[in-house]
Length: 256
Image (cartoon, rainbow, N blue to C red; front, side, top):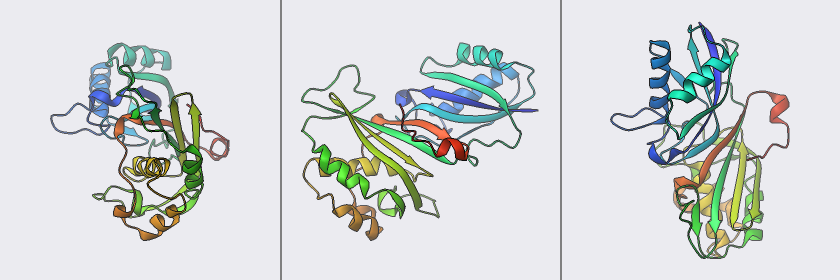
């Protein structure tokens, strides 16, 4: 039995998220089905993060075990030949048997994309959050700086969650304006359910002038989801990169 690490890119529009669900199309179910076709045996896969319905990935990391005697290029060809067109394997390699895509992850980068212009996009509407009102980017960045470091993010997680530890460390949070697209990069050691979308929703309310940037400290201290802003819609969110060693994690690594 060999252990493999693969990097997936996918458009989450047509899926009910990563995790298998009864009678729902999911990324996990699609991948496991294709692996079973290739190996003629059930194969369980483990992802670095369980993306929600409609959320995309540029660098989802997955691990699985198989005794199928294929080279890495043969795995790549077989998988991409059978996977749906909206799921693609970007990289695959054989790794140590101790590798675990979820438990070995040291940090992740998510990116949220906002189309900030008067008109909506016919081509990008399932990949961005369209906001027609002008946003105060300076105020949003001031608020973003208050999220940096180690905090209890209970105010920014889904109300229904089984997470026992709400403490996360945000290592980087940057806003990058590229013409009409606002990209929000967030790197942290871990993320709570809906955390990035709740952060973005709160920042957008600040950008619209509905909140003061200084209010972030009070929201964090409240440990109350009702004190933060709305949850941003899923289609603007991307899992960009997952880190697995200290050397890589210490780099200035916000990327698309």
